[in-house]
Image (cartoon, rainbow, N blue to C red; front, top):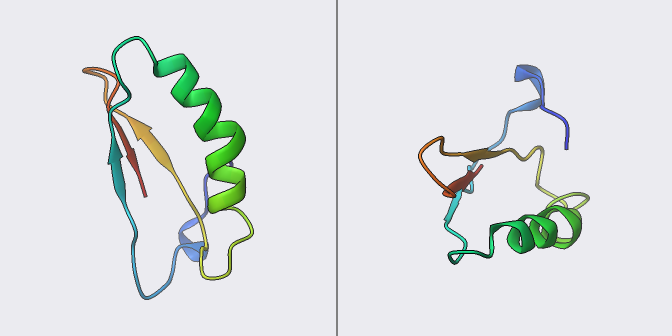
Length: 65
């Protein structure tokens, strides 16, 4: 997914979620997230203007905005 420009990030609400995959399942989690969740639950859904996912440098903890 590409990074949105500041002009594209405008809306009335922000949805965020924190995720920590089970130990030893990070590769499987990322494959599911990138291949199924993001395309089917975020991209192309009315109301969603952009989406970003960040990973903590301290471990397999993620923040999706």
